[in-house]
Length: 131
Image 1 (cartoon, rainbow, N blue to C red):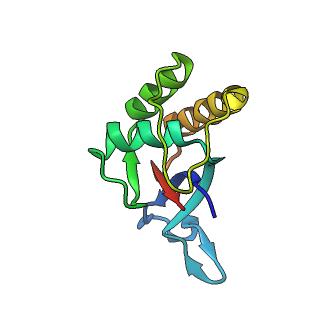
Image 2: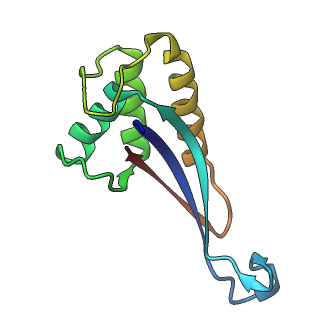
């Protein structure tokens, strides 16, 4: 048990009515969406606390928390500026400051992914934790 934290990206595939053969399929079925793991942290409670307090009004129920590109940038700046709030919880453990470069790298890659344009696709990002 412990705090597992996921930053996921969803790719939503629009239906191409003009050339249906261009629609992405898998196992003979049209693909509606794909979920990509953009980031993962194990026991980074300060980051978790920041996201929950800032983007979920303090509600911490392991729910999906939608994050815009601006939200990702705010998170990135908070990590870089070392302004994450000290957060604790029953299974949360403690934030390891030695891992901050990895955290910064994951968020930067997620932000870059969210900004990419792809024809026939829309993208969204959400955070979700479990413990």
